[in-house]
Length: 123
Image 1: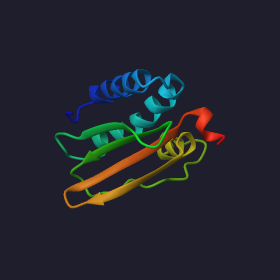
Image 2: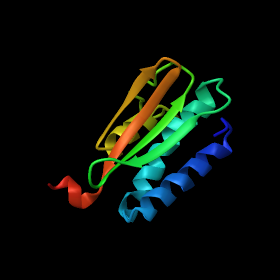
Image 3: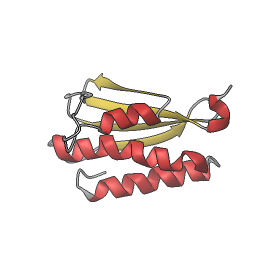
Image 4: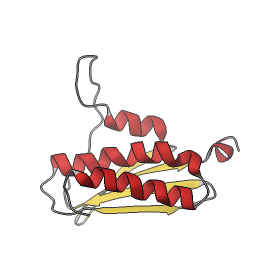
């Protein structure tokens, strides 16, 4: 995908369509929120012209969202104060996901997050 502001909305729609087609609509809102953060970070904080978005199913009821780009600058979780206008995105990803992380690769990085369907969380 191209690193331009409209990519955030496009990524949200793609992630939503994927999880809904897999019959786990209950993950759609969280998945859309989660994908917004790394895509926004790529568009805002890198000079990459494109990025890669991948959404796939893993173990039963688990969805993995990956956003890869050519920047090797890993995202950092911040501790914003009440007046800060930014810096909460990765905290939100952490709160909404089952697990998340960043993997540095030879040609950039991949920021990923995994979600579990509610009926899987209790097992």
